[in-house]
Image 1 (cartoon, rainbow, N blue to C red):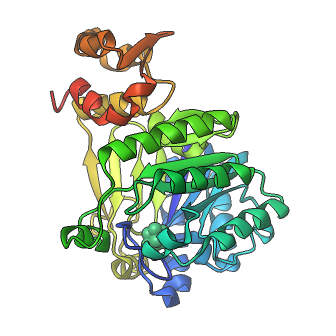
Image 2 (image 1 turned 180 degrees about the vertical axis):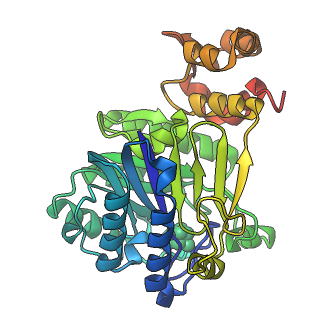
Image 3 (image 1 turned 60 degrees about the vertical axis):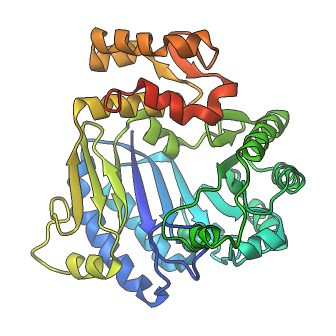
Length: 381
Ligand code: SF4
């Protein structure tokens, strides 16, 4: 099964921590939809032999698009690709957007960017919603019959205490959601948040507090019956995100729109250039082939060592771990033996475990996973 990712590069305003590609030029939404539909049609041969099991609208803020434009994109995908009857189709939403999901055919999963239920922190992040709006948005989605709702939360925010974090978790689980993605705040270069830190205007959370918050997250999720299936992702049984899971298992996916990434499931990666104006120009230019044009996208052939590193990294991120039989089949006995020998110290010291033919991180080592992954990689070795 393959996945389709659609990048919707519009935001009403910019949040201080975000470095995703988006613009506030909402007047270009209709032209963007025309261009996107051209790209979708022009690249259908890429997934000609694949069933599409997941579609994900990410951003930016896909819920800013008027329903008629969203529906046009969904219809274009369904006409030009072999979309499974029961495909998981996710729309990222901001709590304050009013798109009426009930009027959109086929959207069956919502990922809601809540970030925190603390109004003071929401104002600091320059989010446009408050906690009351976020709670009302979940209830409205539930009333509209959406039975698969994910919430995004961030921990380690400046000024966030363990008490406010616990309140966020309690509030999230009390809403009866099915999935939670929780990320430690990261200070991305060039963001206002990073500049404020450099200027001493805000204080970064200590490593100890972040670790304690992560541990509390794992405890609360477990208590609420959620499975910790990937470092930052928790779900009730049967509600894992199929789309994100396909990124971690190396399945093919095609990304459309400026800034979207694709992978052919073998060794070619594609990154659409993050430039809306150029995208609009190119997609209306007759001489451009959206499958191959290097003005539209960068293409990269991964080496075997890079593919191996991705398999190790993605395997360790998930609770399923690295399946050693599959790894041997893909990369050979020598590489498997090398991995096992590199893993020895971590296995002895309880940071990794080997069960049912799979190598996994132990719960205590999830917060130091980056160090362990880099120890096991081929390219960085
Ligand atoms: S966090 Fe979301 S809403 Fe805020 S600027 Fe980034 S993409 Fe836009």
